[in-house]
Length: 282
Image (cartoon, rainbow, N blue to C red):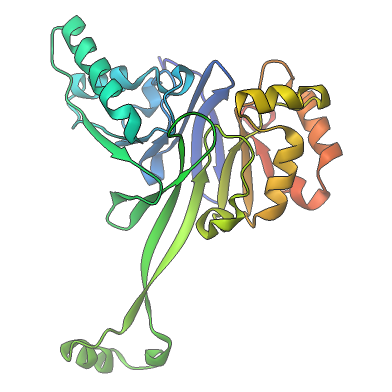
């Protein structure tokens, strides 16, 4: 039996599996990309994913790290790779070492420190671009980018043999293109991410919206979270085809959240939006 009841979405053939309630747990896996954004309490269903991209160290996002790594070892899988902000690396290693002592076995792990601007290899054709967020010390977000080769315009229309001849002469007939597939902002207060082209043009944006009541604007600012008014401002600046809302709160029911979004957003933007924790999507 699965350890969690996770919510599932499918967007343009891309599967998104996760659970995200503010202060309780946040974990979002995308098996086709082999990435898990944050790890929550390490649901069994997401243990096979090889790469965890940790945004920050708050326990509702990071509590399951040791279990994720230990259970992979128990199941005979290779050590998982955990990408995390540089300031968290030593504490993470301390936690893994302590759990290893409790367990009686060393927990194999690959822990990689990241900072804004880094590009982390996920697959031969996939990288995770790291950018800063504004939540806790060192917090970051990630964009998964696919790298492809495309024939240069001047060689379009040539025969296969002609292209082979050019390659033999060491002519660069291809150019590299980067396609931003998904961006995960993690927990963050409002930032004008439109200045980051790969965020603005990601096909899918996974974004927190924690506070929805007008009287809760001060709470959002105090906790460095997003209020719905800021959320509306943010997505109006970006060009994403799909927006997944996560990190909703128990303070406001999903039904009420949907009504508020209908009041705050235009029909154009509403078409883009899906709420991860909305049971109507299941």
